[in-house]
Image: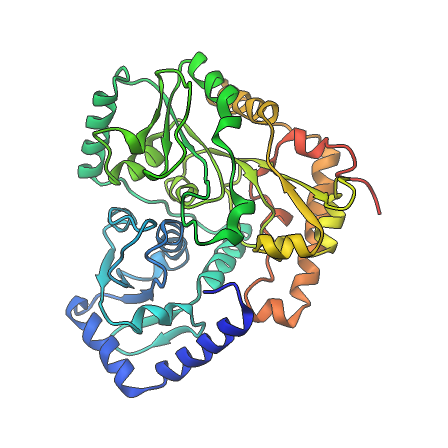
Length: 419
């Protein structure tokens, strides 16, 4: 979708008209019928954004958990895939019940932006659910204690990954960390996402903390990413290694001791394989669903006018988790500041302790209760807003047990101040 509500509304209106056309449905049937097996319950899900690694990793994972118990086969209809965010290996991982059905049809993949529920088309069921609907429904499913079904690592990807580890020089069986930072070298035309980015140079102390503790560090990215400088030999930009292939994005996410990442595409892979993670340089978002015990190190929100920190109450009252554009933040007088080296190193230490001896991060109980209570009150406002309901934005993960804020976040001066 776009960053302009008016354009999104027109697109959805046009797509609903297309879905109502007989010829569109005929093309859909022609696309999926070769993959229908008699006597097997089949769900068709349309994945609109196969060119974005985060959606390709995230949506089938949520669909697997929401609908997997009720169907024998799940057909994933997608476009043909291209561009910097496309990884052809991901759709090998949801499980044997999934069948990838790519199409060159320009309209059918876009139907994945529509919400219409489960439609019984006799030969198969069609799931019309936008990405926002699927995320929200999975969130509610998880809060209610529903089963979570993870991805499975294919043997050929595992073999590629093990060969890469050997080629990298890492001793066999050594634990490793999957590191990912996002910078504007990825999708540079999307300048409105700059607030989501981070400077890899601020990670030096954290990286050294990992390697001194005996971990190797493999960083994901693309060939245009800013490389690490002055890193120990045990820390590699995997995407610059001669043996790199996109299959390694999957392997390193699935087999890491833990991840140290941002809220960008690869973090969805880590979650889909059930691996622990610290998500750092994180912004507040409505539909971001970490795993239960993930460590969350949020960026700092300050007033552009006076440099004063915004309290969490102010962040929520101003509706900032619903903002997805740097330009809008600027107009609202909000500056978002990255984590500093000390915060990142402390998060690294916490993840090492947890991995080594099972020591979970323990936030101040009273502060954590206050954080959750503020989130719940915010979610109640979202649920009472017809526009947020319509857009499937009436769920807020941080009102619930999706991840644990780093103690340093909850201890920030003024962050949890009362009104």
